[in-house]
Image 1 (tube, rainbow, N blue to C red):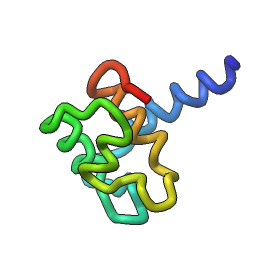
Image 2 (tube, helix red, strand yellow):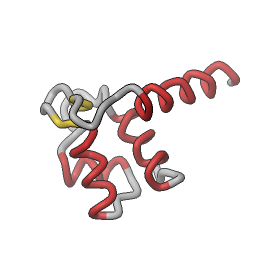
Image 3 (tube, rainbow, N blue to C red):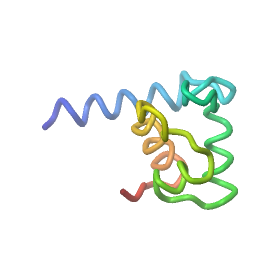
Image 4 (tube, helix red, strand yellow):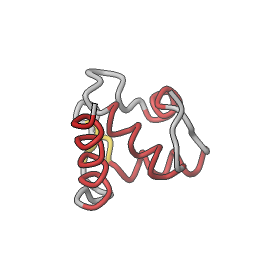
Length: 81
């Protein structure tokens, strides 16, 4: 669906260019974008589940799972399901 791709691209742009490293990405556990980025880079994480295991982000309500997936894509060039 073309609309879904467009919305996904907008979300990626929002996270990449408007969200600062110190902003909370996982509001349930107060985990910042920077903490998640650091975990992905330092531990070479490829999957959302790996990020969840290491940081606990996305494990309560799941609202930030899409953003975690997009960070994985941004950092790694791709993300695994």
